[in-house]
Length: 534
Image 1: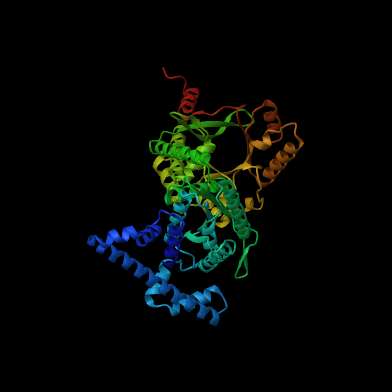
Image 2: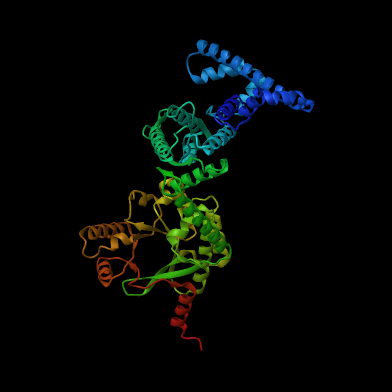
């Protein structure tokens, strides 16, 4: 409350049109005073103003009393700000303690969100008068939930306290640091100068310095060294800033853009970013409707063995937007994660695969891409079991394609899920093999049936020496482990011949066959077996 009063008085003194100057003008204008003395109807206003002044005097006395108490406590307890604050709470009356806890976070001792909002509102008003620019920085801790689960609540709380301490050390007393969410901190930088570009450079330098202060040195708690990963977004408060909601929305857009880019970066807000986010939001809304209305299409791309026979196929989702045209899967699949619809989409894909298997004769397998987000869910195995039972599909003809991300966070959980699904008859393929780092010892713990060589290694065949070496290594290792190998992205006859000559089990790519609508492909298979429909 006292901080609010101080900020308002500072803002009023800086604005000639404020109530502060209107009061001075009213009481020091002789003509007005003479006129007021002849107008008894003003006595109510005068009493009201007198009451306001008395209230201000009372609050200033309270401020002076608390200041003297804090000085006495500081002299008696010079150890830390935390001990001084605790002593002040003990010294304060019960009502003052309640107010202190109401406006400050109990864990970090930082101002609560409502205090921050009030100060941002005052800063926006000052910036509107062109007096000084300001900035809002938002720091989001990446993977904080995993830290909480791994090390426990006490360690997580200690980390949050250390983050708040480092942010306070790196900012000025007139700035405001607030914990605005469980693992999100917001910093209000004030008085950055009258020129917007200079203020923007200053804000970026502070953001970079705070980022380094939080990430360069790990936080040590209970003998553990915990390194932080951050996403940082910031926006400027200037003469065109309209209100608190606008600047907070801009800062939120910036930090979300930093997260979408993989984190560990600082992203400033600008109009191009706003347009990009607005376009993405509209596309996400259309995607949600497309999933709900089952407007996505399922395509299939067959795999061919050494005898040029179809030995399996992969299901591929396609989205033809009514106005934008085809949207690549690499764009809309991550969006499904963001809008929380990846699980329904995956179960729909599985439903389509099982229904297709029920109509296809023989032992041909169908591969379905399974995201780690779905595989590690507590209810995923039961959901798969339900779909298989309802469609009466042969589970041994299903292959789930997963990437190494499926076990990077929790190997034991991933191994358990893969084992449960393998007991149903489902087999697993390790997708994009050779594209990144893979700990080969994991293959011994996971029930993997197949390796799928990434297209980046196939592209250099047969001329590139490094590509040949990597492909030979994969084929040799798979042979020793008894794993099937599929090469994806095969686009030339030379690539196909080289792979088959060196023991690759199956090929998939444009040279073999392009993806086509699933319904048309099933009809084509039936026609090949039974002949054309008369």
